[in-house]
Length: 367
Image 1: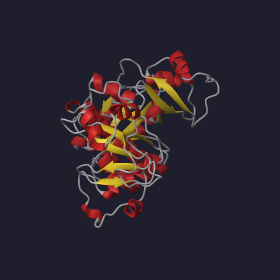
Image 2 (image 1 turned 60 degrees about the vertical axis):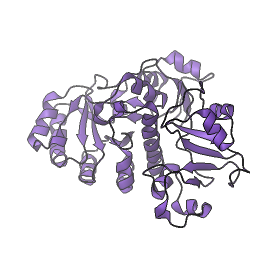
Image 3 (image 1 turned 60 degrees about the horizontal axis):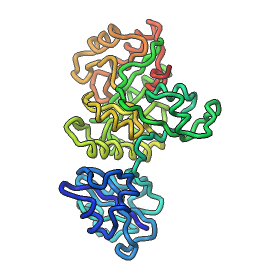
Image 4 (image 1 turned 180 degrees about the horizontal axis):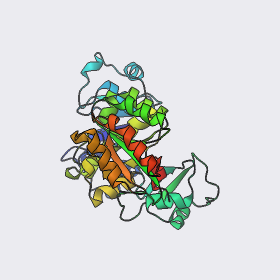
């Protein structure tokens, strides 16, 4: 049965949506893990099972409703398919003139970036070096809860690539600093401009340092080649929202949309599965933290803000980092700041002289 990907509009009810598309409330609730059919939120993305005879599509197809700001290029990246394959299935005369509300049949190989997530569980892909203890510490839960969520799991038999369930802690927390060891994480937020990216990558390569880059969706759409360059150098990539909004002023459904779109871009452009999230402007509340956790994300802030975005001068950037450094520190930098590349070599040299090693955020927060 085809499934229509639909974004809930203000004033929508599940009854009206089901009636409009010839589905039922129970069918929609079941496929979307909706526990209370009377409560849906504008901005939520849901799946609607539709009958083949009502919409002419191949059996089991995904049907996407174009949203404001979408282009065929954006849709192709979100679903991990080519624009040509979308055009081949749809009677679109001018690819540049798609419009909000237009329904597009996706190729059979398309992966739905808005797939409903089972409430209360994170589906986690085991990384090299992971142990159940490390994973529990990273997600703020316990070894026992992980073992209970994965009957038959051998805690000594974890293998990279395995997918396990992790129960969500009741109150998620934001991480500002890693473990108290002489290792620090350099992190770069990317939202605007290509600017210094290649210079930064070369400097990090010269010192054999792996950093963590938090990428926004709009940046990835503009610079997919830079995203691939970051990934090919072995750096860690985190989610930094889709449009860099003030998330505390948004509904949780809108927050979900921001996260899921960016998640899809990271996966489809790099092949990586992100689980680190940095909120724009460092703004969050408890509801957002818990929501991010339910989506499989750890919220990462920073120990030291270099203030490079203010362009205070390279000396100021260097001294602010070096004078405030501490074991386990997470340092905030920006790939588009004009003075960051010039300051980076001296920052690394000074911290190395002080006895610090460098790692990704994952390496630094591991116990």
